[in-house]
Length: 379
Image (cartoon, rainbow, N blue to C red; front, side, top):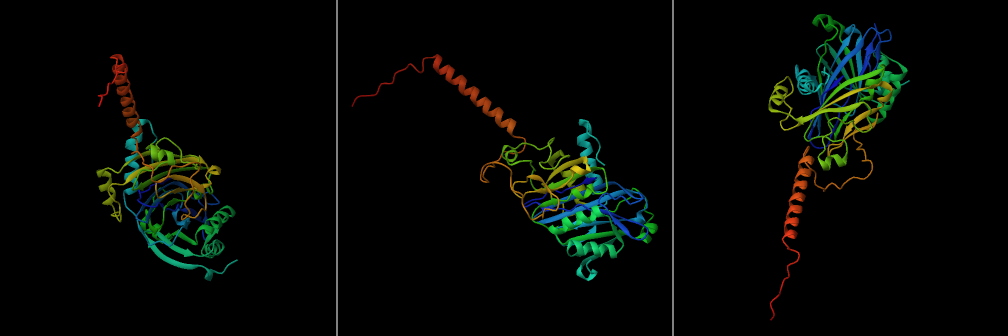
């Protein structure tokens, strides 16, 4: 699955991963892995871009499936009520995947591809995008589960348990179903996907990854982040300007940072010129992460602290407003930080200065500099 994040500035905003759920002939099965009870529909790959800038999070996601789209749907735990839901960019996710491939393939990398009454639930928003019927609801986890059952979603025990945990962090959920008539009219087939853009106001960047582990054996996802500053894996790495590329996100087994770079001018114009993507801003940083892990290991979500941009895996269901405390000793916020990748240069400069100082002292001593006497004039 490919998750694309936009580099965000300021506090990192919480972004939501879709908890995918499948529809049977009449009821729908909510399942993070998009696996129907009879295996008729299965998630092939999901691609998501999450961006946070000035307190606003942009969540763009799409997925490809294998099976009958008329029997497909999903439920998404949301951290807050969306400001708006609209059709996402037509080529943004593919363009980001291409950008990553161009950087990683020459290095041998693999290509990136991306018992309550219904009245106890408040319907916050309804919208139809292409063949998707979308409903945002607000209520307790148990009430939303009951509402989903009454509206055709068949939830297995694993999915119910996980949605209840997410419901403790936020009362908002997004239910999505394919409109069977629209599927036939548009001729959608397996492998097709509809990009969906969710805009929310959040204090920091957050992505629920644990939902991808429901109903599957292995989680395979690509994650793209757009932020205002480079991201790091620890406070020490931030102050020393150590690039996180090649390392694993703390507390997130299998989530590896594969690429980080400033958003170049060509990529910026390609993204910003796409449908409903004018919010993409210049000067941001692109971070690409890949997640490959057995499903039982993916029990975490991703958070990025506001200042500095530190990536952490946190227990799934942790409220996005809750900023994790750094582990161990950390430097004070006023301590200076080196630019990314500058530590080797600094060390070389220091080594050069030490060498010059050593040569100067050697030259001074070899010419009897230490033996000279200084006489002071008598008054």
